Image (cartoon, rainbow, N blue to C red; front, side, top):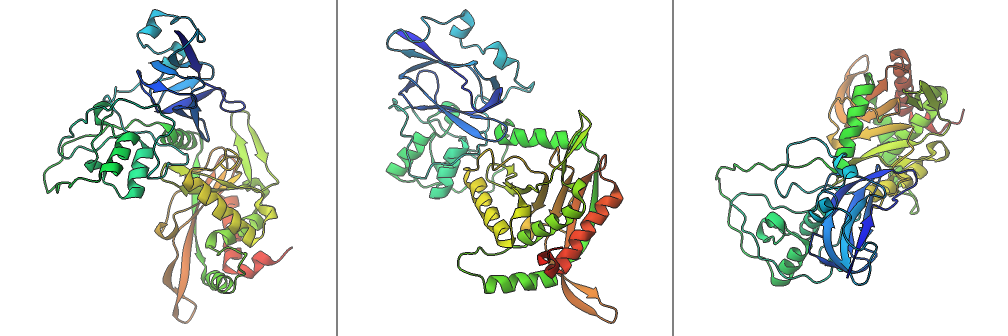
Length: 438
């Protein structure tokens, strides 16, 4: 018998480290070749790591939330034959201690319970009835009783399977550490059918769940902190009368060709932004504040802030200046579906030069958008409301919408920001101008 060390693989060009967001195995598990061992997250994507050999898990080299350097030992297996090493290289590794390059990357925080809250992932979920086929058979473990009112512990993939199958996880007994519900537990539950759950009643709830900020949520937190700490924001709000635009949009949708997508407001806004940027190109830029250089781009790559089950991501419509109204709508639909299903690629999620954020019908009256660093501008869309507007002789009902937009005040003056938004306002209020080539 020998031992085989699996190291953190090279998960992308120029990437030096990745965050561990999920273990699929634990010490003592038997794994086969191609069994999924772990999931790690880089800046833009989640990568699953399979086992290259068959063996028994002896040691795990990191905890969920750790940032692991490429090439660092990640997992040790006992295998048939000589393996890659004859024995553990140190007493510390035999004891299961964490390598220095991993331990040094851990955030200083209060130690969470044995099973912290599950990490978020941006990846394609399993279907409700799909078993974890790559795992080797395991001996059944006894279920751990869950206290009244205690939340079930499960990974995002398990929660998604349960939600899609209409299963209340409080009904599912967990056999993992600290009662964690595994994919095998769901498989057993699907096989034997649900049990009747007791009504929780009005009893007081005293449990406190500690959730480590890992994975996509950590990336979002880091980017927001950088943006707010480095960029002095100026937010400018302008009211826009979109009555004519909404009439035009409805007419287009009522008479659209079968090969064209249904139009929302966003394609019109994107085309208006392209025309406004042609007159104000300094708004379509990235600011390298450390080097003191503004990178002004000719191509308009519009990031679309999109809420997913895992968190906020920003897929990018590239070269919007080369797309017509329906081209923008088609690309928007593709990117939104990829982001929500977890299939968006690194290219889909990077390279924006200006961003749009919209909460749709929930958009509120006014927002203060946070700039997508290192960009210098973000356009925020608020909800459309019918309001009385004075036309000089009477109040008439009009469809009104606010644009709440933020700018990097280090490189964009307030006057320039206002002129840029006013130009977008004019184009949206007279939508025929969007189609007129100068």
